[in-house]
Length: 62
Image 1 (cartoon, helix red, strand yellow):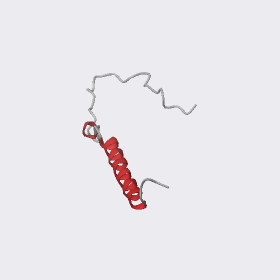
Image 2 (spheres, helix red, strand yellow; image 1 turned 30 degrees about the vertical axis):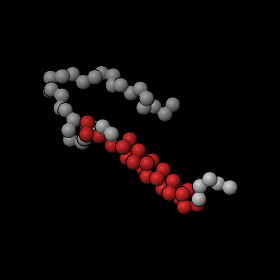
Image 3 (cartoon, rainbow, N blue to C red; image 1 turned 90 degrees about the vertical axis):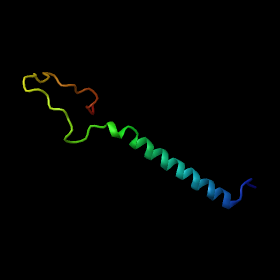
Image 4 (cartoon, rainbow, N blue to C red; image 1 turned 90 degrees about the horizontal axis):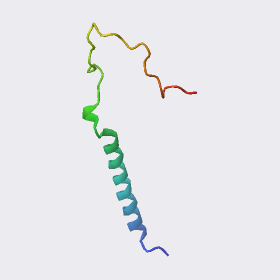
C-alpha cells in the first residue's frame, strides 16, 4: 500500500512537471540577452585580412 493517496500522487506529478518545465525554459533562455542575433554581427574593417585556414574542428561527421 502506498503512503500517498491517488490524489496526492497526481498533485505531486503535476508539481514535478511544472518545476521541470520551468527549469527547461530557464535553461533555454538563460543568457539569451547576450546572444548574437541575425543582423547584429560586427562587420570587420575592410583592410583586415581573412583567415587563411578557418577553424573547422568539431564540425565533421567523421
